[in-house]
Structure formats: structure tokens, C-alpha cells
Length: 142
Image 1 (cartoon, rainbow, N blue to C red):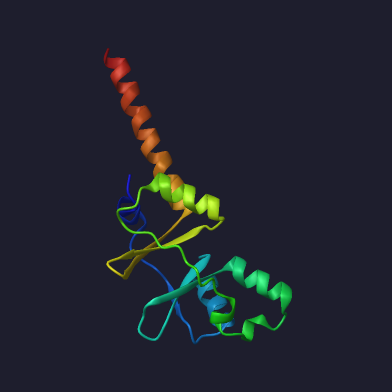
Image 2 (spheres, rainbow, N blue to C red; image 1 turned 180 degrees about the vertical axis):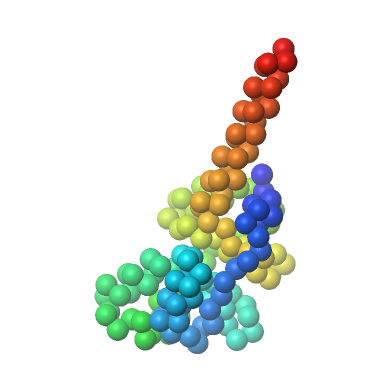
């Protein structure tokens, strides 16, 4: 199974925040959309980082005035990006091993969506259930 099929289910929506915005702006975007991470983009709209709830909490633990900082101070700069053709199992292993839950997906350099470990796990479980159902039908017909 490929990331492209997961994006077909969860949709291509990816929420971004400009790199010149504050952490407070990012918090508002996260809270209003009930999501856990935003892709940080520069003026040209190109991804330059990701900011997650974890990034914000860690910064707040060090600095109580972190909400007024620019997102570039708090964001993760070394982002792992996926592509539509990536294998779901391989991506899940990468995300689990790297301890991150959100993977922006690029298609020909453009943001195509974002998947979470939850999205990938659900897709994998659905595929496994489909295989079980097929085997059960085959056994009943034998």
C-alpha cells in the first residue's frame, strides 16, 4: 500500500503557517483546526520546517514567553518528507523510529498533504481486515 492511497482517504489538506508568524499564531491555527502540526512555509510557499504541539510545549518549558517567538525559533528544521509513492509500512517504521507523528507529503516539490501515524495505522488495519474478510469468504466457500 502506498501513501497516495492514504491521501485518497484523508484528503490532500495540509495546513501551513508562514515562517514570519508567531508561535501564538501557530497555537491558534492548531487549536481552531484540532490538529497537531503545521507545515512552516516561507514567503514563496515552500516548506522550510514543521511545528508541532510537542515543539511548542518543549519551548514553553524552557521559556514562558515562547508564544511571542517567531515559529522559526521553535520549529523542526530537519523535516522528513514523504512522497505519494512511498510504502506505508516503510513510512510507519521511519516515523516510529524517528519519534514523529506527522509526515508532510511532497509531490514534485509541492505539498500534496500530510499523514499521521494514526492515518497510516488505520489504513494498514483496514487492509489487514480486508484480507481477513477475503480469507473467511474463501474458507466458507470451500
